[in-house]
Image (cartoon, rainbow over the protein chains, first blue to last red):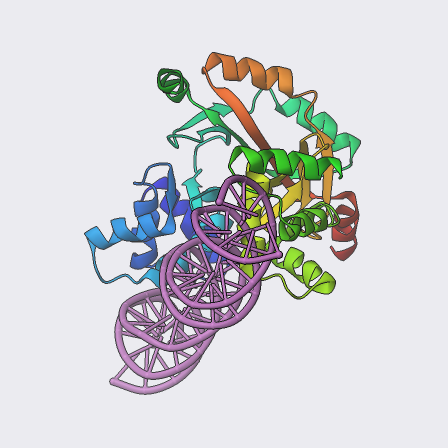
Length: 148
Length: 148
DNA sequence: TCTTCTATTGAGAATGAGTCTCATTGTATT
DNA sequence: AATACAATGAGACTCATTCTCAATAGAAGA
């Protein structure tokens, strides 16, 4: 059994729930996706593997994966909630190109001491952290210049 | 004419659009709201002023205000998109209490030199910036302790 | 002032992501 | 095998947001 299956099973056990075949398939498909995905894309991928899993079950699995700290919500793509798997990944800053949608990631390392200091100042117990920076990636910057 | 009306009018002019009475009312109501609001709440407030403005028009005005840099999208409250007016406000970090929903704000000042350095490294032209930190405010931290 | 040309608007239908219901199925335990 | 309850599939449902289209407003010129 893979490590993230173990994590999920342990989490489910604390809730009196079980790691069924269906849930294991959803979990493994999540970890097969690009890091960022929305539920509809996940459902589409699952459909290529089997057509006996319903959309409702996929949606139902998402909050479980979230609570198990295996995925986290990230930015919205168009009108859909978007997620990313985080098991074994450190959290990161997202640099999102507003033109082509490319996402570059960098880590929080340099930021954390500053944020910890601010948190202390306002007596806040930090949990999740989400830093999205919108702008233009280098490719889109140069193509902007060409067109003008 | 108030300053933000002027800004909006100038923006609209660049698009060949006009600052109508309806748009001015929506704009002014936005600046009368709590800093964070969703469109439904905005619509409710407008309804107390006049009942001749339709929901569709309010929704239609939002992207214009966004493009004019008068408001920006912030976190989602429940299932609704949430916005905040930003004209004359510097952008800020949001410390969001996962328990009571309180939002504390601090500024980016200390963070910007670090982010600028990262941006340069990955050749990214920074635009909007959104840093949301979830956790517990000091009130909810103490009430947690009481209950345990 | 009257006309003409658009942008603007209101009302309500349409869309679509996400949730819920409920009848059926799976599974662990006895 | 029988019991009990969690899990699931199918599709109905909700509700925020967008779209459509006919009616209106308002600027520019006659």
